Each structure stands twice: as C-alpha cells, then as structure tokens.
Image (tube, rainbow, N blue to C red; front, side):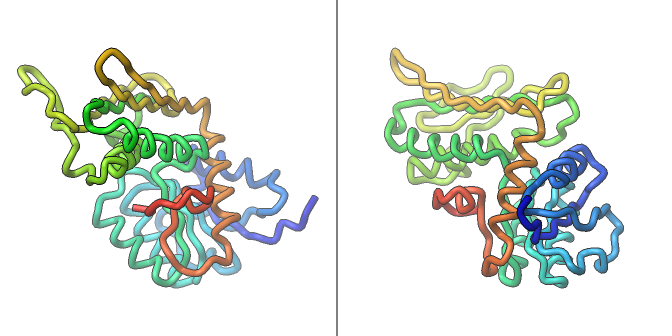
Amino acid sequence: MQDRSISVAVFGGRGRMGQTLRTCLDDHPRLRPGAVLEQGYTLSPLDGCDVAIDFTSPLAAAAHAQACVERGVALVIGTTGLTHQHEEALRAASVHVPIVYSSNMSIGVNLLAALVRQTAAQLGPEYDIEIVELHHNRKIDAPSGTALMLGREAAAGRGQSLDDLRAKPREGQSAPRRGGEIGFSSLRGGDIPGEHTVYFVGEAERLELTHRAGNRLIFARGALRAAEWVAGRTPGLYSMRNVLEVSTPAI
C-alpha cells in the first residue's frame, strides 16, 4: 500500500454520508482518516488535517468553511441546498483556502452536466428542456441541487442564465409553455439515492440524458477524489469539473 499522506477530516461524520466516507477512507491507498467532526465542534480537531469534507447542512457548511480558513485546511463541500448567501460565504473563504464545491460529487453526474451543456448548445431553443429528479422521501430541498446544476448547464449552453429561463411551478390551469424555458419536476419516495433525467423534446423526436445513483458510495468516491486533488492547491473556488479537467465555472 502507498503512503497515505493526506489527512482527511469529515464534518458530519456520524451521518449517513459521513459514515460512508469513513468506510471508504479506511481502505483508500493515499488518504488517511483524520478528525470526525459534528456541529458544535471546536477548531482544534482540524489541526494536522490537510483536507476536510462536508456533507451537512447549508448553514453549517458556511461555518465550516470559515473554520477551515482559520486553520488553513482545504475543503470539499458536497452539501446541497446552499443559497446565494451561503455561496457568497464560500467565495469569500476560497480567497484564503482551496475549496471544491459541487451540488453532486458523483463523477458520472458531472460528466452528464457537461453533456447537457453541449446538447443544449447544439439543439437550440426549439427543443423544450424538462428536468425530472427522483429522491428518497426524506429529502427536503426541491428541486434537488443536482437538478438545478443541470438546469444551469442547459441554460449556459444557450448563452443565458437559469434565472432567465426557469419555468414557474405548474399547477391547475397553468399558462402554455414558453419557448426556451427550462422546467423542473421533483418526485419523492422510498430510499432512492437519486435519479436525474434531462429531456430535450423537439418535433417528432426526444433525447433523454439520465443518471441513476445506486447507492451513496458514488458520492463518497467522488468526494475523496476531490479531496486528493485539492490538497495543496492554491486558494480558489473549484468544481468537480476542475477535478475531472472539464473547465466550467464552479457556481
């Protein structure tokens, strides 16, 4: 086994994702387990750690970013549901330490996002875009952070922002679909880790791009790949696209 020289702290280490990360760390050839931190922690456990990984809550993630700044620790954030205010806190922290932030740490999802941008650019506004996401019945944010990420990529492919193209929720006697808008549907049930499909619907044809998560291991593996990549980087706000060498903005 190679020298496991990069020490990784896990915020929310007793949660479902935290426990999955800890299991994967035990067998990782280049990363070693560091501190396991919960909300209400002190800063001192971060001493000696090279990277921290956060899968907690939006408010906690912003506070954890500041803690990493104070200890000079790189950070990987896979927490979803961050508002613009939380993202601004990450930008401020990234001036001092390197941060990888993504609404979805799956390598497959991030490659899907690149395909969505490319497809939206090629097909043009005459193709309607609808994004459908399905998650377990305990998920509280909707649409999911991943669905919104895919929406941003689709809008960017058309040279616009998601704020300009996002469709209003449909219920009852809704207005006809506006040309070029991007719609979202959120389904909840059972214990599904996550499924996302982007539909491009034109006249007489439909293209579907889908990713299905079988379990949380894919998110943990992606986060550990990001942790290995970000250790020792210069300060900045990075995305999984940077980790995978697909260059697009982080937020």
